[in-house]
Length: 320
Ligand SMILES: NC(=O)C1=CN([C@@H]2O[C@H](COP(=O)(O)OP(=O)(O)OC[C@H]3O[C@@H](n4cnc5c(N)ncnc54)[C@H](OP(=O)(O)O)[C@@H]3O)[C@@H](O)[C@H]2O)C=CC1
Ligand SMILES: O=C(CO)COP(=O)(O)O
Image 1 (spheres, helix red, strand yellow):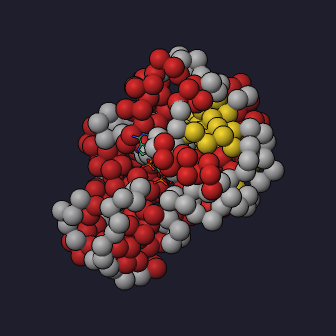
Image 2 (cartoon, helix red, strand yellow; image 1 turned 90 degrees about the vertical axis):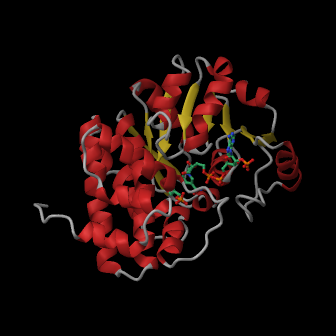
Image 3 (spheres, protein in one colour; image 1 turned 180 degrees about the vertical axis):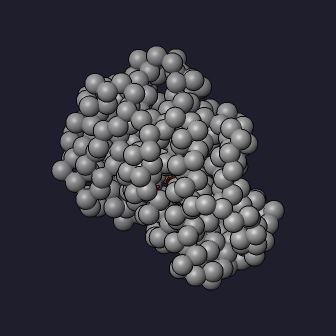
């Protein structure tokens, strides 16, 4: 298997470091200066500083190197994936394309694998997702992820090739569940951060995490996801990590909203755009996802944390 990674952000770089323990890997950055600097210093100082990139990672801005691989990990933010796939579709036919991003596209309301299927129908689409900070992966700390692929033989092949002694992949055929878990946990992490930033308390955060999981299960049921996926690594596992750790950018974004502080607008915050996508998806399917809805309004500055709290608490009492 010839492995390439498109997207040299924190996650793409972390994955390249980890997968290099299995053999040669190609890492593609869209910016040629960034690629040259990384190749010279063997470090991604902008996105993943203080982690050495091994010599068997070819760092390039030349897409030809990506297209020479049969297996391409897509570590490009979810809102940018569709355009990238559309632009490069003719070179991606027949390849194994593994989405490593977490989100629902705002324009199409599709998850990452559905985007692959839409733009490159004859590729083998898969999803790599679950609780994993790029820094932990780069340090080869023990990590367990879900590899979801509808084609179970291809999935098993990818599981074997992309696992390392410290990166343990569990196989699933439930692509929709894996897409939804990764996407929604970021939305709930923002809510969790807002809760802590606004000093609503740890009990309230536990309620948000639990009711957030209920929203994940509600939309999962409507879209045909398997319940076990949403309580597995790619659902509950990633929700637990992201809702409780300062290392999460989505959680920190929520903290800043809660504390009414500024936040670097150049940070990748998948949950903000996805909150809007999910709210629209819920409308389309006649579902009530109140936490996702307030996160969409908080992220776009339409409401403040107090209003969000009143909105959530004043809803009619109901059965759990
Ligand atoms: N960081 C983490 O711990 C984890 C991240 N993920 C997921 O991985 C995905 C990427 O996140 P992450 O790497 O952290 O983000 P970063 O912000 O660190 O990097 C984003 C990368 O995407 C590139 N990029 C942005 N827009 C485009 C585009 N239009 N075409 C091609 N490349 C583009 C950026 O290039 P440039 O530098 O030139 O702007 C940059 O290399 C997200 O969906 C995230 O949820 C999943 C698990 C863990
Ligand atoms: O997805 C992640 C951990 O699994 C990374 O989370 P953030 O994008 O919030 O940093």
